[in-house]
Every structure is written in C-alpha cells, then in structure tokens.
Amino acid sequence: ETGVTQSPTHLIKTRGQQVTLRCSSQSGHNTVSWYQQALGQGPQFIFQYYREEENGRGNFPPRFSGLQFPNYSSELNVNALELDDSALYLCASSLGGLGTEAFFGQGTRLTVV
Amino acid sequence: TQLLEQSPQFLSIQEGENLTVYCNSSSVFSSLQWYRQEPGEGPVLLVTVVTGGEVKKLKRLTFQFGDARKDSSLHITAAQPGDTGLYLCAGAGNQFYFGTGTSLTVIP
Image 1 (cartoon, rainbow over the protein chains, first blue to last red):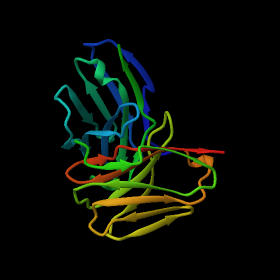
Image 2: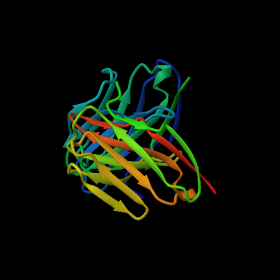
Image 3: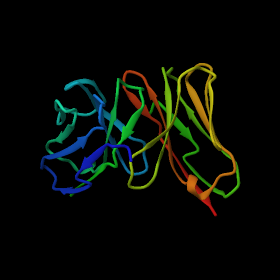
Image 4: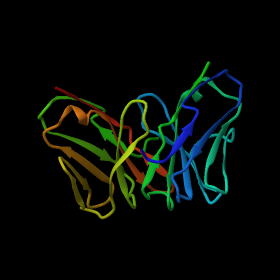
C-alpha cells in the first residue's frame, strides 16, 4: 500500500466526452504527477503539480489539464476524448520535484469507445 | 521519441536462472530509478541510483548506474516466479522519463 488512491478504478466514456480522474496523495506529499500508460508500454509523463501550480509538462495537448488542491489531492481532466486516450492513467505523489522517490496509485483504466 | 530504451523487451526464463535487463540512453540523468509493475497495479519503486558507477543490492537484485549516468542495468540472481512483472527504468531530466519496459516471466 502506497497511500496514494485513485478513483474511479475503471471508466468507459464515449468519444468527444470529457472525463475527470482523481488522486489522493500520500500524507505529507506536496507534489503530484500524472502519467498515461498504453498497454504494453512504459508510462508517459503528462504533467506535475507542486503546491497547486503546474511545474512541468510532457508532450500532451492542452485538452489534458489538471488541478491540485490545498490538501495536495489532484484531478486530471481530459476534454474531447479520442479513442487513443484509452489507457491506464497513473498518479504519483512525492515530496519534492522530479527524480525524488515517487509513490504510485493503482491507476484508472479509461476506455474510450 | 523514447529517451530510455530497455532491452530485452520480453524475457521468459526458468526458475533459478539469472538475467540482466538493460536501460540505455544518450542523455545524462541526475538520478535513475527502477520500478516493478504487476498487471492492474501502479509501478512500485525498487531503487534509486544517483552516483555514476554506483552499485546497489536488494536481496537477489543488483542495480548498477553507468559511470556517465546515461545507462543502468538490473541483474536478478536465481529468479523466482514472484519476480514476474514489468520492469521499468525511469530518469529525471526536465521531466520524468520512463523506459520502454521489460516484461519478465519466470516459469516454475
């Protein structure tokens, strides 16, 4: 158990819809990162939030956006869903920036039909 | 573009055999981490290496960071079925990069 929880665990959406995924960080961790993992591949970095501010972003379009709240929990929002957005979405919390020890949640499996 | 390339991509071995997984890049990383991921779960951190040439041991697992901090290896001695999983290396640069992954199956 890492103390990082994600909800929901599974989700099915229709192309064009919008989705919000949630992440509760490990206690005391002020940094949260989001990743997209396609089947059989390594996770791809979407973005990172530190104390409610985005402080790093990977190669994802603006329709991928996020929020971090004062309690350090976080949301990932994806607008105008595409079929290729189907993937496992992982959240990781850490105390500090990139490269520090990160603890992952179990992920949200998103299927876009 | 994949910054971190892992090899082999797939590995199937008998229980008791030894194996090595490689993680290579043309970029220098301030630190490199190894994770193991099981189906339906998030990656679990195994080790972080920071210093070029560093070697860390975790029971039957030995991790090495290259002298130039561009590559790393994971060696497993006497593999067991419980070692089965997806092994991922990850490096910290201007963002966090994961490798392509090595799927290991240990057959009893």
